[in-house]
Length: 350
Image: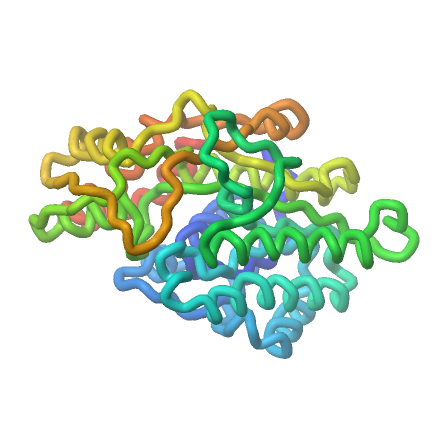
């Protein structure tokens, strides 16, 4: 599986972040040659720094189009994964301007850089499950459903999807593939991704384990909210499988794709917190009333039928196992200083 990546040149934006650092480790396991472009890690500890990765790294802002273009051209990648983002809903309320500059104009800069780099043959743009106009109905959202977004983060990611569509039609059309250009681009939508090494604020499991490490209680907001929780390796496996299809010049895959657990596995925030506590006894939680300072959706599910049927992807670790692997990662890190990233990748690939 994913043998195509061996010795391939892969470029990542956002490589110092949670998903980006896991993707770097995944690529090392696949023996790919990779380079990353991102801001410096903003958490302490930092999963990226703990891993001591071997790939090239440029610390820069996605808004700096000159440095971004130079970094991509110098490396001459064959495939690019765009993960750089301002990824937090509550932060988007505090700083809408930076959220849009990063998520929309940052994506625009990446697409412009791709136009000027002839070595690139495939691109995967990472957005989110929150790009859909969420009506909070019971059925899972499909790729063709209406885009939207209540909050600044969600709408900025929906805007980046619309931007990508415009670039596909204007510069990277399938009707002009191999005639005017040689690039296939797809987008990947996934949300509530969990796994070890995420120390971001305002995220359920990171907040729980950070509190557990200092014997503190975590107050849980919106305990009844339902989300499609999935392990970061299931998510990244989908990104890599999509990228492999695009590298193989399979034009039908230059499209939008949901990567999500089966909808019947969705759990409430309260259920996830209780499963976490059953794995690590030091976790202490307290459930309160939902906070009303900002809107937050109570129900969100994604339909993964398309990825399963056409891409051949499926979740390997169900939601309960994803939580188990995540909490085990943190428990071993805080108790023993043990980093289980590479061992979990090997286990997953087996």
